[in-house]
Structure formats: structure tokens, C-alpha cells
Length: 341
Image: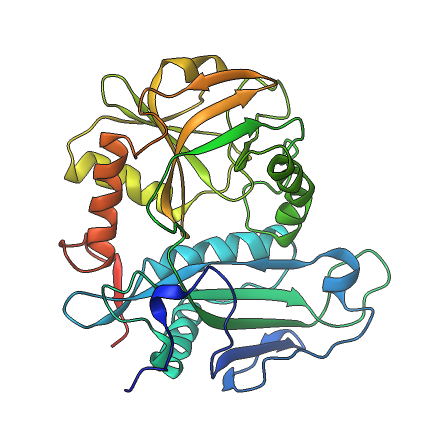
């Protein structure tokens, strides 16, 4: 298929309308068959559940053109499982895993002309999401829902290279104990907006949230998990019931152990430990790893030995290996790559 006339190298990380999106309705206790549609608008009641009580969940993944010309996506089964967990927590109907993957495949196939070519640095971002649709005025779950998938071509998260960022320790809490921090709910991201705008105004790139109970342990940022490298090259990721189980983080831990032969620890990480780490990164779908060079806690600076110029050496190996797997330059573990075409 002929590609759209897009300057792939100039794309930012933003929304570009594509030709088709997938829609399935939940009514009378069951999901319909779903279909691809052209209309990108949604019409609903002013009293819709999503508008009144933020009953919405979402996922994010990407489709890539590999070195050998295939179009693939990365571990969509884990996105499907996480959406199921999110739906159960917000009293929403579960959209079946096999149908989730089928919807992703159909939407990417229908927008093949928007999948950037290999080597362009761009990818096709895929956003599956679900929301309460019917009017709800009493505080209760909706009875009707839409599950939708749209796509948009995006450029690399970094322009001009993955330069280390500076983050601050936030005075806000990202999630409450026993709350919704472990699911991908829209409300989690809404509460992070004031904190990230504040951080940007103060000259920082991101926030580091600590555990809300004791404020002594590292949790995550507003939209990414942390990954640390010790001075003896162990890979350490924070463990907490309030942290979203990042698919990228889980994949990097596997890569660290199985591909690079590194020791991996998934455990509680105390803030006091940070001064002893050699490298730090934020991991997620958008950038894979965003290197961190400096962490600031009310004026007290923790400068990572890896510095502010480049990714640390272990972080770079992790980044290169995982992107190599995603782009088809390296052999992938069984089941990680879903070939679409």
C-alpha cells in the first residue's frame, strides 16, 4: 500500500487523524460485534458516566515497520490483560483479550498507509480505550460502554537524541494506598496534570512520586516506571501495589537478565538509596527509556554518575536491545511480536 504523503521525520508526539477507528458497543449486558468506522467524533449525553464520574480506562502501544518490511506490534496481549484488570477495578465490562488483539490488528491494517517506514524514527501509536456512555447521575457504574481504538503516527519521543532529563521530587501523591495507582485509569492522569505543569514551570522535566504512606520509597512518575542501575550493574525497579505494571519495564527486566546477563531486582526502593545508584531512567511505551541525569528534592541535588550528556552505558544497552527486538533487528522472545502484515 502506498504511504500517505507525510514528512515522517518532522512528526512530533501528537494527534494526526487517520482513516479508520474501531468501535464496539456494550448494551444490554453484551458487547456487539464491533466495526471499523470513519467518523472520529463521539456524541453522547451531557450526563454520560465518563463525563460525570471519570469512568474511563485506556492503553497505549505502537505498530512498527521492521527491518524486513513487516508491520508488527509489541506484546499486545499484555495490554489486553491490563485493560481487563483496569475494567474490573472500575466496575466496567471486560473486553475479551482475543477481541482486543483482533481490534488492534484490524485498526492497524485499516490505517496501513499511516505506518511510518523503517528507519524514519516514527511509529504508529495505538490507543485502545473504554468509557461509560449512558446517562448516570447517581454515583454508580454506567450500564452502557464504548470500546474504541484509534491510531496516530508519531515521531520519536526525543528530538535530537535521548539527553538525560532533570526531575523533581513531588510534594503531591500520585495514588492513594489501596487506590487505583495500579490500573491505567484516566483519573490517575488527571490528578497528575497540576503536578507536571508545576514541575515544568519550575524548570523540571518530570516528577518523582514517593509512596503516600511514608514518603520514603520511590514509586513512579506521572506516566512511567523508574529503572535504576547500581554501581555493580544490577538493574533495580521499584515494587509497590500503587505502581502501574509497565509492559516496557517488565520487558526491560527480561532483556536485562536473559539477553545481557545482568542481575535484576524488583523490590522496594528507598529514596535514601538514590545517591548510591549509577544510572536512572524512566521507562514506558513512548520513549522506551528516558535517561535521568539529576534528581532534585527541595533544592538538594542528586547527580547521577552517568551525567547529563548521554544515556548511561547499561541503560543504553537495554535501550538498544529492546528497540532491536521491536524493530526486528534482534530475535524476539516467543510471543512478544505480533505480526500484522
